[in-house]
Structures are given as C-alpha cells and as structure tokens.
Length: 341
Ligand code: KG4
Ligand code: ZN
Image 1 (cartoon, protein in one colour):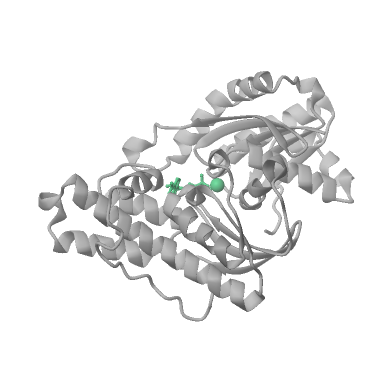
Image 2 (tube, protein in one colour; image 1 turned 60 degrees about the vertical axis):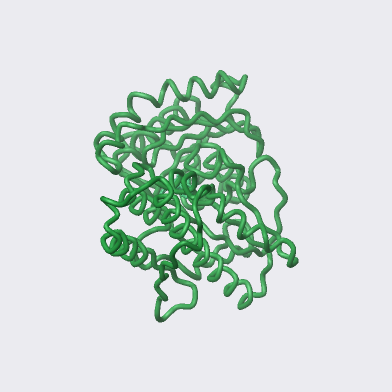
C-alpha cells in the first residue's frame, strides 16, 4: 500500500511517502521566521504552510519515485494543533484524496509520535509504556495494543519541550531551545547545580515542568547571570537543567514500570531527540528493559509518522467506509475529524 502523508500542525510543513511501514521519502521544511518572535506565530505559520505545501509534497513524491496516481490512501494531521495550520494540510490532503477517489485518513498528531517508533519495521511488543514528550504535550500511557491506550500521566502545566524552550530563552540560547540546550550541555557539568523538580500531588505519574523554569530564573538572578555569564557557565546551567528534567521523566517512568509490571518502554516526540534522555533510558537495557526511541529524523514533527499511523489505522479499522467520506461538503474544511486520544 502506498501512502502520502502531510503534517502541518505547527511550524513544520512536511510530506512523506511510505510503502506500508517503510519510508520512501520524508521532506520537512522548518519555519525559521518565528525565531525573532521567540515562539510560533499562528498566522505566520499558516501563511508559510500555504506557500510551501504543494512544493514539499511534489519533492516528496519525486524523491520517493512514486506518482500521485500510485497512492492508495492520503493522510494528514487532523488534531491537535494550530487551527489555521491544520486546515491547510488537511484540506490539501482531502482535496487530493477527493480528486483521486481514494480514502483520506485523519491522524491524531500525538498518536503519530507514539507510532513513529514503528517506522521501517522496528520491532514491536505489547504491552508497553509510551512516554510522549514534545513541545506541546507530555503524556505517559499504557499501550495494550494498537490504538488501545490508557493515559496514566500527563503534565499539569508546561510540556517538557516548553520547559526546554523557555529555559533556553532565559540562557539566551534562542528558539527552539531544546536542541541548543542539548548541544551546550555536552560541554557542561550536570552536577553543577541541583534544580528541584516539583512533585505533583494526587497522581503518581503526572509531571510538572513550570517550576523548574522558575527556579532557573531565580538562580540566574541570584548569581547575577547577565553580568557573570561565560560559555562554560551557560553550559553548566544547561546541563544541570537537562539532568533535572531527564531524571524526573526517568523516575516517573520507572515508577509506572513497577506498578504495571511492564519493562518495554517507548519514548517519542521532539524531546526524545535529547541525548541525555536517550542515554539515561538506554542504561535500563542492562537491567532487562527494552527501550525504543525513534530514529533522530523522526523524533520531531514529520510526515512519516503521520503516514505510518494512517497505515496502521487503516489496516486495523473494520469500518473502512469511515475513511471514504471525502465529499464536497468536507472539502470546505468545516468538519475536523476529532476523536479522543
Ligand atoms: O514533537 P515536536 O517537534 O513538536 C510538538 O509536537 O510539539 O517537539 C518540539 C519540541 C520543542 O520544544 C524542542 O525544543 C524540543 O522538542 N526538542 C528537544 C530536542 N530537540 C527538539 N528538546 C530537548 N533536546 C533536544 N535535542
Ligand atoms: Zn509533535
């Protein structure tokens, strides 16, 4: 089965072509124009998507060696995300599906991060614990089987990626900050300062990341960071912050692993690109755990993960007619295919 997939939920315009679970092409255009504003500007994002989406899709088809007429299904992110950005990708995909008379498959973006770990025939084993850490979401779930998820924990305030981005901003490292913190941490001392992580009352598996950003802020004031800053100091604080976040994620997942007796763990989402988080979880392999991460190129937002999720969803749905519903009235984009995670 050939799948064309589109991702446009935030500030990446991406198109991928898959043959079943195998990625033939995955083109990503990251919008850099948001940097000067310190965060994604929704209207700018929509305009960039509109400008790029046809070109990116064409490049993806060219690289895959396939043509539009070879496609069996077309997929796009339908939720969650910036509404204007979603509508552009979804209506582009729906229109193509309508014109080719093939099914359109709407995909939940968070689910797609989870299934990014299934790309290119990566081994899979149920049940597993799924830790999804991105710029907008932080979720811990028990995955019993394909599309059978139970959410056991989530962030009560900022997402993990948000904490990286905000802390990077405090350190003057620019946006998006996760990758910068990761890079600078490599030459830093992670034991330089112990930043406290908030404990969330009322749930064993929830996360909180807004406190650590505030404690970095107070710490910077206390040491007169603006006047004392050196590259080494930036690296040491970045590494200490990163260690606190990694440790908090690690401890919570271990607690869940014990409670549910599950030793297979899948970490995904943009923050799963982080080298220290990868290193910490990988250490568990010597203790009989199985740990899965996406290949680096599939950690942050990309259309390949939308493609595999659409493929699995289509294969696993008895009611295939559900996907054959692209009619004229849907092309206006009045209906978003919302569904519960
Ligand atoms: O999954 P993603 O691309 O978008 C959302 O669905 O939100 O995640 C983006 C987030 C950003 O907050 C970015 O700073 C973070 O992932 N990120 C990282 C790294 N690379 C990207 N965070 C920590 N370490 C990294 N290496
Ligand atoms: Zn994402």
